[in-house]
Image (cartoon, rainbow, N blue to C red):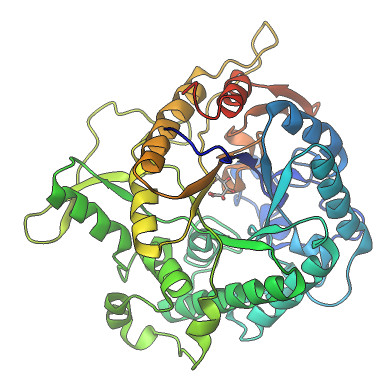
Amino acid sequence: MGFPENFIWGAATASYQIEGAAYEDGKGLSIWDVFCKRPGAVFEGHSGDVACDHYHRFREDVALMKELGIKAYRLSISWPRVLPEGTGAINEKGMRFYEELADELLKAGITPYVTLFHWDYPYALYKRGGWLNPESPLWFEEYVRKIAGRLGGKIRHFFTFNEPQCFIGLGFNGKEHAPNLSCSNQDLLQMAHNVLLAHGRAVKALREVIPGCLVGYAPTGTSYYPATEKPEDIEAARKAIFSPDRDNWPFGIAWWSDPVLLGRYPEEGIRSMGEDMPSVAPGDLELISQPLDFYGQNIYNSRPVESDGKGGFRVVPFPAGYPRTCIDWPVTPESLYWLPKFLYERYKTPIVITENGMSCHDVVSLDGKVHDPNRIDFIHRYLRYLRRAVEDGVDVRGYFHWSFMDNFEWCRGYDERFGLVHVDYTTQKRTPKDSFYDYREIIRSNGETL
Ligand code: GCO
């Protein structure tokens, strides 16, 4: 059986990670521009100032995407590039960049899938309180309306937020991302609620401005798979994935997805949050749970769990020497079977894998090529499990490989290489890796070569 005929084979990137041109053509500052300048914040003081210089080289990059044969490209828009102050006047040159990029993609027969927010928050709005400000959902709506008004004729596929788990959980919870604040649980929950309201407003605005557009969401979250296929272990994994643990909720799935897809916060979570719970006004959850066309999920790895024999779960340690990627994440292809299956069961919405991929120690070899057998192996293993999900009736619509090209990996700078295309950051030379050609065959054969 295999993948459906119209399966969307794609690749993904994000604005701050590839564009560069951080101070050009009227772009406003983002919190990442500011954070990267803080000593010790990012590996070896790297920043996205130049990144892959995609802002100037996007035509060359789109030509490579065409060669790769992807049907769709997931990109994100830099909010401060189009609205330097976050709200108000449009920066025409910034907007023109996305118009030209969309035209170039369409000319190449590639459908743009736009993520409206992939972490490069306008610094001007951060200074006004950012996601903690009750007006923040309105700011986002204004930005989305402006994008929709200008790009709606060219772009019809959208994701609202990429990984709220990370930009709230890692940014405001004393972890490693911009703006690197340590907030109280109460403030974190309030920000989360504002982000969810912003999501709801964005979905409504998109549908009003671009009738017939398709809208999704792209969260991530700590994930698990059953250590064996015994029913009690499967149940343990399901439980582990959706448990809204008070300490781990910022990285969980249920807290961020139940309100969006089910129109409610998880009850067990509400109880454990006690007085930290934000006030939920009448109508909030209706707004947050606008129907979606697809549910995106970024999936890289998960951990095996088994039943603890008491209705709970226990994490099973990996055996010694278990395979890991360069960024030290375990290689768990099972993730692409179990998580889509559990998500589809719970949310009953078509699934798109919005990110999946690995970082390797890639080098340009003496023969001028980049040999990355580990990535090829990774892709085959993971996609075989995704195929199994499809064959089991999970409505999976697409797969976006992370990433199209090597890029700025947040606080790890350029130390990680996730791309199908190698980037030499000194010369900006692009070299398609062996995995690029292998993925091209997977796409051409609609998965037959797996
Ligand atoms: C994320 C982001 C990407 C990352 C990728 C690899 O998942 O953290 O969406 O921007 O670069 O996932 O870590």
